[in-house]
Length: 106
Image (tube, rainbow, N blue to C red; front, top):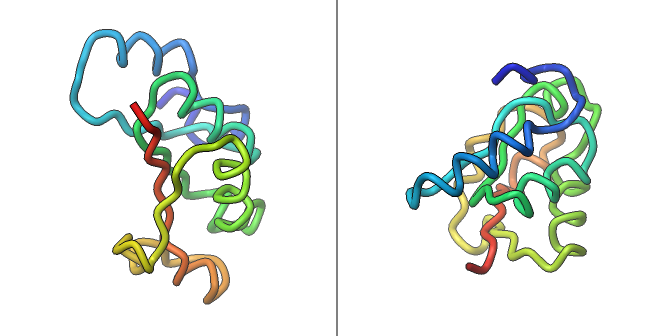
């Protein structure tokens, strides 16, 4: 969480260290600034990724992050898959209805 709000990227070393120590689902949080940051976090071992300020302030749109994750060959849940579309209070109506979670194949 030291990177929270910095938009400098997730703490990838921490994600990898936690992943190697636990088998429970791991959610990366804090530091995202670019769509590629979400991809890097999943590659480092996160089961899911989240962010707030980049969506609240309009820096990123959820569909941009989903596209980056899909391009990296990670499965992305959508509202049609049962993802909770109410979890996003900011962004466009399309973003709020999209729902997003990265679910890497393990």
